[in-house]
Length: 171
Image (tube, rainbow, N blue to C red; front, side):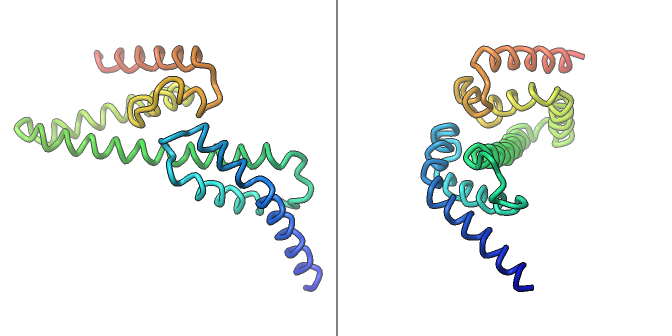
């Protein structure tokens, strides 16, 4: 029992030391990479990243803690962007329902379901770029820095995604 407490205290000290050393750096990286899309939640993302980092067994054996922290924080930020995109998607759908009441709610719901199915069927790399562009309102440059891709790769994926969505909508 005492040994477990000592290990826990040692892990807590290691995480605390890493937090004091890298938290400002990590917050700047997240703000720079995700910009205004993340906004004031960068600090929350950094704290959550450290909580998740603390769960690794054992913390002291992580070879590159900065790289791991950055990856965890990036994943958390991307998850937040996806949640935001879903919220935006819902609000756009609600606006469509209100604007198109004369066409009937069923028709709008059918269109929303169809679009959601088409976007869900896209390959994950294409879907991620498409959602960040169309639903989160990010530019190609922002998407490139967010996903760690080149702008040309983002443009190529967006072109493929748009052609696939257009093809499906025509059918």
